[in-house]
Image (tube, rainbow, N blue to C red):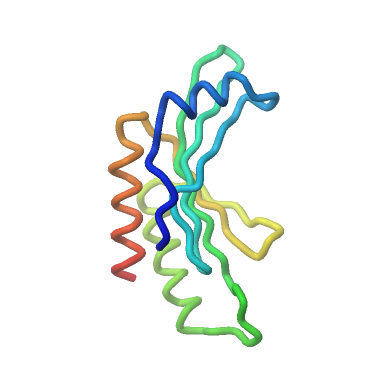
Length: 120
């Protein structure tokens, strides 16, 4: 997985406060099969929340369906669900998995997800 940058909570928070949609997002790592990112949102009460998002691309760059690859991705998806991630289908042939976390837990969760990807 190509590492993009570390999580900077203060930058995420400042960008969210200054953005039109009150949200900011940083890609932390990606492959042809996955993308991991962290973000911040400012709620109606001006309270921030932080999240980690994992996009699982179901059939990237494949002409035919790769059943073993889909089985590994399903295993990963199940593990994310057990960890408390919400899931939703996206138009771009992927499943978005997201969890809200305390800012101090973002880096540890990011490391755990990278470890899961290597293991699966």
